[in-house]
Length: 98
Length: 98
Image (tube, rainbow over all chains, first blue to last red; front, side, top):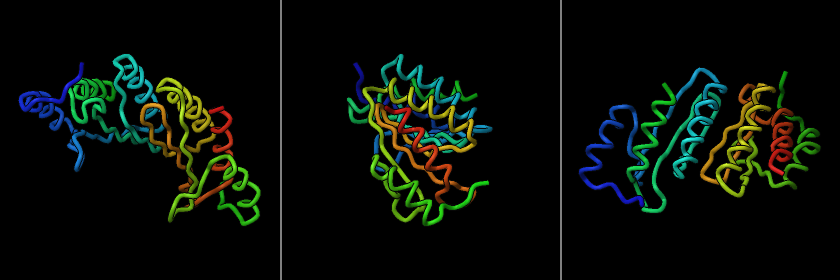
């Protein structure tokens, strides 16, 4: 189902994400972003909403939460790097965090 | 309210936690434990329950989730190290993870 993003896919799917605050992880084919919310309840509410989409799509983030910040890393383990699912989940998370 | 654990407090509160799988974090006055669940929904259900207690007690974990594992670090920022609140939250998390 999933496959590594092609060069074209990277250009069309990743560049808008980079403009939205996502960045490549060093030495890894993965993207990351840190969200900052007003407080813990807002941060965890975001995680809860994102968790439901992640489970629905069978594609889960790596994420680290301390109080009001949530650092998210996305990559597709099955293909060993970035797939369209990562871009899809990244866009959804940005939407949920608004 | 919170204060650093005394030597006696460390003995009485931390030792039972070490026996339950908690460990000191290197170069930091903090404890950590990694929980492994059956799947993402179980891991996130644990986080959700723990989040409610954390918010209720005004004491929040640092935690990292990837699929079915949750790595938790506890320390009390206000006092710069371990307090009784960390031991309390650690015990609660162990109970919630059962």
